[in-house]
Amino acid sequence: MEYKDIKENIRESMGLPQEEDQPEVLEEAFVAQPKKFDLGTEKLSQKAKTAHLSLYNNYVSCFNKTSAELDGIPREDANSSCSLFRDVKLSEQFNMSAVYLHELYFANISSPASELTMDSLTYMKLARDWGTFDAWQRDFIACAMSARSGWAACCYNTYLQGYVNVIVDGHVGNVPMGCVPVIVMDMWEHAYFRDYLNNKKQYLYNMMSELNWDIIDSRFHRAERMAQVSR
Image 1 (cartoon, rainbow, N blue to C red):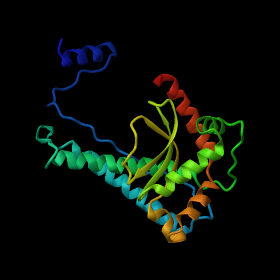
Image 2 (cartoon, rainbow, N blue to C red):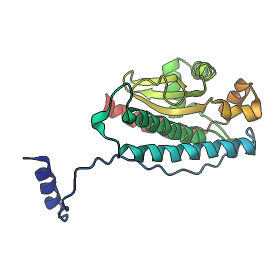
Image 3 (cartoon, one colour):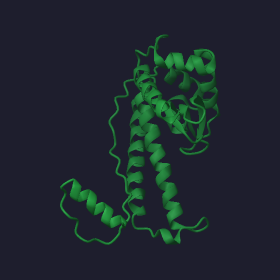
Image 4 (cartoon, rainbow, N blue to C red):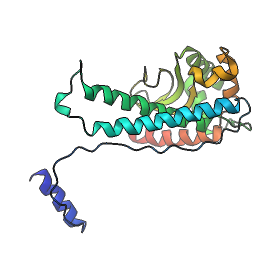
């Protein structure tokens, strides 16, 4: 049985109307909607917040644009040397990661009432995989300080079946396969230079002092559910 026959049988079984004959067109375009974030922290200036949110909105626009462009590019001409498909596909991936990382970062910072309890899932998992919570914190700071115009992220790794800290250069460089981010810190220069100049360690300490552990803990709970099905 051919694919079109299988699809028609499914439509009939669900009581859906028949499709009109259409040429086979690949449609993979994604559309992201920019999210709103309440950055209440006083450890970043309003100018820095406004500029950063504007940059994020631009990444959303670029992601939507490149994703839509892919629909019109022939796959038959793709190659590793001079391929329009390769160029636009990599641009889509770059902007998608930029959007996703910024949304995770904005959501998990800016909590002046930041508090992490020792009986939370987050605390217990970080202490388990690093020996102590303080050891995790030292390792995360080292990753953040090592990033080259990029990010530090704590992730659940489906291969290792545990949590790891990773260094991300740019938006896509060096991320191991199978990583699900639960804590994200922006270490691009635009995140800190307006307010902290080249003192990125002070910026990092200030952002970590206001991590939103409620948001982060909800991510750990989701990661643990994923862990159950990835084993």
